[in-house]
Length: 317
Ligand code: UDP
Image (cartoon, rainbow, N blue to C red; front, side, top):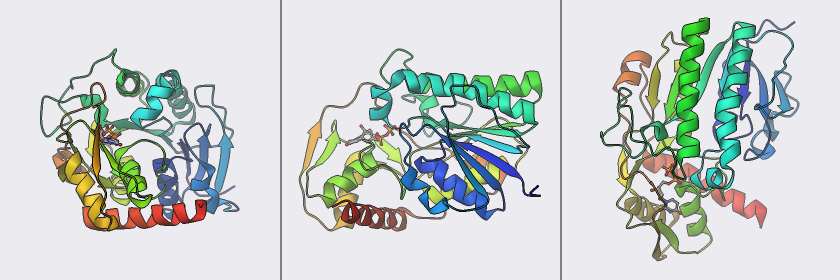
């Protein structure tokens, strides 16, 4: 029997799940990854094949999770995360953060494990407070097209706090803001892979609305570092992790054209319903609690991400 601690990661073949797995293995954990591969891709974890500290189980976590042996830490990261994905599969999106969270919490209770849920800045909806602090309760349309994601994640937070309060499970909640980096899915519809893919393939960049809406983009290694630190902390309420550098979507489009070195037009498309007008994390709590700070600046992060997609497209063609 290994003396190593065991971590379970749901959504293990996704963008964040796979980077989190790499970090956990580097920290000396044994990792059991689970994914039903609806939006995850084995390509993200193929480098782990043959690693004696890694096991992968293809499983839909909305179904009962049975795992023999000890488990020390559970990261519930399974969920579609791009607006286009959750518009196409709204019921799976609702189920994975409700039934899936219940099952993952049940496993944590059974094993006496620590539990960390990937929540989201979408809990704040189209925010009326800016930047967003953890104390803000949000402005969410429960019945709009994004409601399936936002409300499922809000339910997941409520369920997590209930397991903490009623069953004494050691739980943590991270509210993840827009994150980017290698292993994002080229076709997932989110703005980072969309614009980079369009630029590298010589297509016009599709800006939704007038592009004045803002987002704040965090490089994936910074986000994972914040999440790992939170998992080792004794704090149970939600913590924002994200990069406060805010820009408009139009500024972001211009930055992608500059960093890919191409000259392409921008075309405007209809703004999706309930698309938040602003988003920027207040990270005062994470700074104080975790001694955490994003380190990778936008220019460096976007250069690495473009290099990843260049290589990906070269392999594909
Ligand atoms: N967006 C855009 N063009 C695209 C994809 C997205 O202008 O091809 C905009 C979208 O309307 C939103 C922002 O970029 O205002 C970020 O969208 P994303 O889907 O990445 O995630 P969100 O932050 O909305 O969850």
